[in-house]
Structure formats: structure tokens, C-alpha cells
Length: 204
Image (cartoon, rainbow, N blue to C red):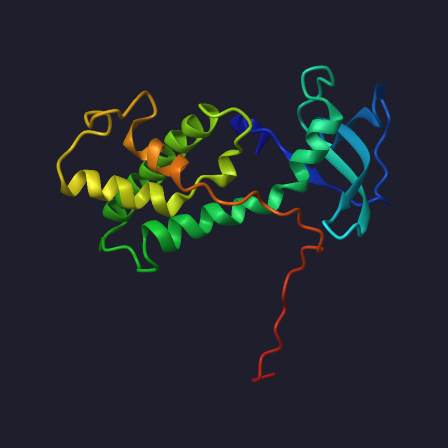
């Protein structure tokens, strides 16, 4: 994966031995996994609920971004805590854009073309949503509703109206305006452990 230029942030077991090559502060140090240089971050994350209940968990993370000054350990630990939100991207692609239906194309080339079209549309809408959130300081992009963005884009296509040609569209466009007008409530912190379900088959 690192050969493609992608960066990796993942949790590793606490009993896995990783050599400490150099300390980088905030409980992190440089190490190596296989042939890949990494930075190991050891952190305690505490989440306090509205009723005052607190949960504390120990995290041991490995990341390929080794510069501690540019990528502080505290920021990365908080980022990993929000890792589950990638599931909303899968849901948006399958159910909101695709409406749960299989691809219409019948051949490998057409299927690939259709998949790229959906991914391009998804990224374009997410970009507009992020720009809209950034136009209002203190607003997280995860409060922008993807369904609202999709519905607005469809309305503009049906009406044959450009995204920024309507009156008072502003720099964020009509989609951005409607997203900001119907912001979702802030996400609650996840405190439950993520587990893989292994249902027992009735045929065994």
C-alpha cells in the first residue's frame, strides 16, 4: 500500500514488539514494521458522556507519517477515534447514490465506467459539502447531509440550472447553501468497541 504513495494509520496490538529507534515526544517513537518506517503512538483516550460517565481506552497506533511536528500525536489519536465514520461513505455510495440497486452495466468495461462515474460524483459532492462547512467557522463537515446534497444536485439537473447561476448562490453554490440550511446535529462520540459479527449458520 505504501508503494502507491498512500499513508497508513492503524491500531496494533499492545503485545507486539516494535523497536524504538528514536523518541518523538507525546508518547511516540520512530520504529519499523517489516521494511516500512513508521511512528508508534501510545495514547490514552478518555470520552465523557453527557451524563458524566467516562470511558478510557489505551491506543497503540502505527502511522507512516513520521514527522511529529507536522503530524502531532494528539491530533492523530483523535483522528483515529473517528475512524468509524468511513462507513457513512460506503452507505452513501450504495444506498444514497445507487439506491441499493445493482449496477446497470452488463460488461466489464461498462461496469468500470459506471463505477468511476459514481465515485467522481461522490467526490464532487463531498468537496462542495466541505467547502460549505469551511465557509462557516466551527462547523464540522460531518454535519453536512449527503442526502440533501444529492437531492439538490438532482433538482438542479432536472431544472437545467447551473450550480452558481441562481440568485444569491454565493461562492458555495446552491448545494452548499441548502446543506448549511439543514445541518445535522453534532456527532456523538462512539464509546462501544467495534466488533466483527460472526453469525452462526443454521446449516452447520
